[in-house]
Image 1: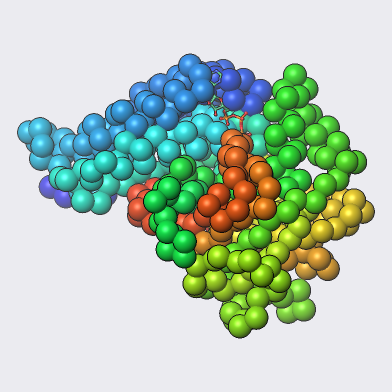
Image 2 (image 1 turned 90 degrees about the horizontal axis):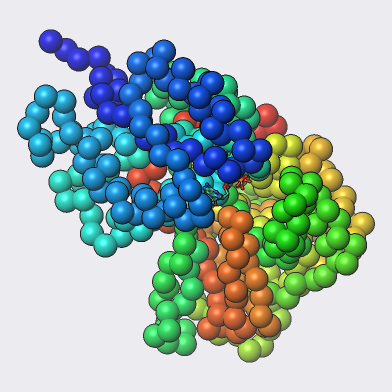
Amino acid sequence: MQQPPSSIQTAQPVIVVLNPNAGKKQGKAQLISVVEPALKNAAVPYSVIETTGRDHARVYFRDNIRQFLRNANQLPGKPDGVLSTDAPLRIMVLGGDGTVHEIVNGVLNGLEEEPVLDLPNPRITLSVIPLGSGNAIATSLGHATVLDALGGFLRSNNEDIIPMKIMSVSTRKESSQEGVDSWKVQTHTLVVNSFGLHCSTVYDGEGLRLLGNERFKVSVLKNIAFLKQYTARIDFHGPVQKYDANIQALTPFVAQLQHQDTDQDNNRADGVTLSLSGPFTYLMITKQAFLEPGFSPTPLARTSDDWLDVLAVQNVGRGKILEVLSAATKEGYKHIGYDKVEYYKAKAVEIETPVEGRLCIDGEFIHVSPGPKGRVRIGLAEDSSQLFSIYGSVHLPNDQSQ
Ligand SMILES: Nc1ncnc2c1ncn2[C@@H]1O[C@H](COP(=O)(O)OP(=O)(O)OP(=O)(O)O)[C@@H](O)[C@H]1O
């Protein structure tokens, strides 16, 4: 008898990851009152893991992912070890971006040593129920509320499942020779890597947790009042597209023989398409169109495309940065056409600072040592390009890229 196409998927329990502390701490109540009844009603088997603190989700998935993938692919009614090769492991996250970040990094840590040999193409499908503070990932996928996201999961059409591409953040290996870089991946990010005002705002906001979600408003106003410029050079590697405000579209950027950069003492490797010499007021590299509901600094970013979106604002004053951030908040995308705002799609960028610097990577921080040895590279994580997909839609309001 022919099986319905979804029968393998639904036979395996969805792993529901609950972060009870995310956002307004509504996760547990929403699990009991909304999510569990909906899953039971739809006869979707599930198991719940409740995280108990920082890093729990990462370690849990690092240590168990191989077994979970095998379980998800165990064919019903067949002996152990007889596996399907096309059933995804489904993970539902009740929390925010930080919980998704931990899960993805845990999965990749758990798989990095050796592949799962009997599963040549393991697949993981994530459903993010927005119960964090920012909820950049869910918002960017058109899932602004718990019910939107749950509805997307339960509909389960193939069109509602899209690839989820991930960024890697690497530092140079100690053994790197001058001019011949080799890189060590430090972490993977899904939302935003930033330098300058945005990073400083997130950093200072950590010290204001008592204020709840208001902390970022207080922190950004403080950082604008005492505005600094952040010295760094950014090198773009590989193909680049640049947003052209005149035609309101992205166009291929053709590498120039003479770089904008005037730094004489430059050690960069070959293959640089474009350099920005800073100093930067605001710089971010993202994979998401929204960083929170209503705030869309990189509106052309897409979870499923093979690009990193780069927003760069170099050396501007308070009035200009306020104008840019307020347009990114109210109007969604107009700021990307403003004078002094540069918008690119890139494959990989390297950041080098002349003095100690700090990068904010999905809400965590890494220290950047001065000079070429401290360079940080942000690219697309090739190893995970087929691994993750996510429930959501790429058609967003204000969508200019369709
Ligand atoms: N039981 C717990 N108690 C305290 N912290 C926890 C617990 N479980 C997980 N965490 C930590 O909470 C952090 C924040 O979670 P998460 O990012 O999901 O929520 P958020 O910060 O409110 O949302 P967003 O990232 O969308 O702004 C996670 O990085 C995780 O390390």
